[in-house]
Length: 70
Image (cartoon, rainbow, N blue to C red; front, side, top):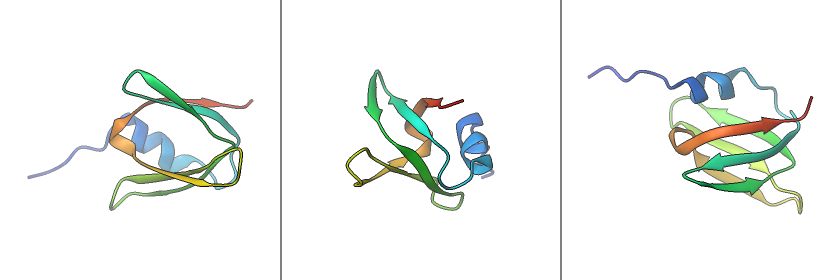
């Protein structure tokens, strides 16, 4: 069965590590983060660095939105 890549996964695959991100939105809630760390297209896991330096790893398919610094 062929799996289509979601628009969010496509967006995450274009971000460079260190891209400043304010927060991510998932299923009606939000999580503040400092910046994007990585995205693994095989597992569809996205990693973000939080304000305190901790890592937040999320299933990219569950991310509804990303607020980027411009």
